Length: 461
Image (cartoon, rainbow, N blue to C red; front, side, top):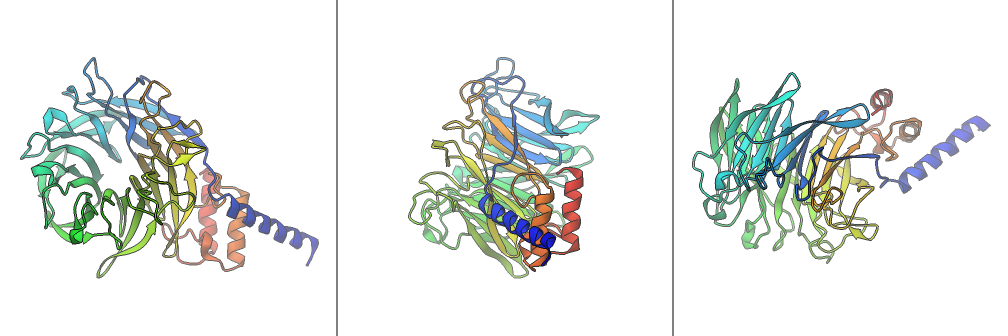
C-alpha cells in the first residue's frame, strides 16, 4: 500500500468515526420573529413550508385592538436568510377568533384556520399574485354549530383543502373537503368515521396528498381501549371520498392519543402518539410509521426518543415527512437541563428508519415548547416554539434549519467530508449512504448517489 493510499484510507476511517459520534449535531439555524412581535402572540403555534416560502401562525396576536384575533406571517428564504414578506389577517377579524391556530401552504396558496371565529370556526384561503398575498375565500362548514372548532387543522393539496372540526356533533368530530375551480372554492364532502362515537374527536389532525387523506381521531377507543386513538384513511375517486382503512398502533394502550398528529407522503404515513409509554417511562411519546402495500397499510416501525426518554416529554406531538426524512416534535424534551423541547430527525435506509439528528434552539429557555409544530420541504425545516419569551411572555418564535440528504456528517453543509463518507460506503458496498434515486434510494451506493451529492455541493444545499 502506497503512503498516499494509506493516508486516504486512514482519513476515511477517521471521518466514519467522526460521523458515528456526531450524528446528533445541531444545524445552523435562523430565528424567525415577526416585525411587530408582542407578548402572548404565540407566534409559532403552527408552521408550514413549501419550497422557499413558510407561513407561521400567531393565534394570540391582537389586530387593531381586537384581542386574540390572530395573524399569520409569510416568510421567504432568500440566500442565507429568511425575510418576512407579509402579515395575513382575516378580512373580518374578530376577538378570540384564533386566526392562525393552523396553517398550510402549497405553491401560491395558503390556508389559515381560525377555529373560534364566530364561535363555530372558519378557514381562510390566500393566494399570491405579483408578490402580494390576498384573501381569496372564507370557508365555513355548511352545517356549522357553536363549538365545532372548524379550522383546528388544515391541509392543502392540488386545489383541495381538508379542514378538521374535532368537536362537531358532541366531540364525535368530522372533516370537510373543499375544492377550487378557477378562483372559486366549493364544498365537496363531509368526512366522518364509519364507527363514529361521541368524544372520539375525529378531525383533530389531518393530512392530504392529492386524492388521499389521513384524519386523526386521537380520543377514540379501538378494541375497547380508552383513548388509545386511531387514524382513518380516505381516498377520492370521481369526486367521492370513501373510507378505505383504519390505522391503529400494534401496541395500543389507554391514553396513548395515537392520531394527535398525522403526516402523509405518497404511501408512507407518520402518526404521533404523544402520551405513549416507552420502556416503562410514562407519557414519553412515540410516532409510528406505516407503509401502504397492495393489500393495505402495514406498521413499519415505532419511533421514539432513543437518547434519553423522559416522562411527559410529548414525543410525537407534531410530525412531518418528506421523502426519506421524518421529523418528530418533542416539545417538553430536556435540553441542557431545561425543558425546552427539541425535534428528532429520522432517515430511511431500505425499510429501516434511523435517528439522525436532534434539533434544538441555540437560545432555548425552559418552557419554550420548541417542537410543538414542525414542517419540512426539501432542505428547509421550520420548527415552532410558541411559548418563547424573547419578545415578551409567550410572544413565540420559529426556527429555520437547512438540511439535505447528502449531509452525512450532520453539519448541515455538503462538502468534501460528505464526499469521503459516500466514497467509503461505495467502496465497501455499504448502502447506508444510498440517497438516489430520491426519496428512498435503490439499495446501493453508486454514480447516481454521487451525482445527487455533487448537485447539493455545487448548489450550496
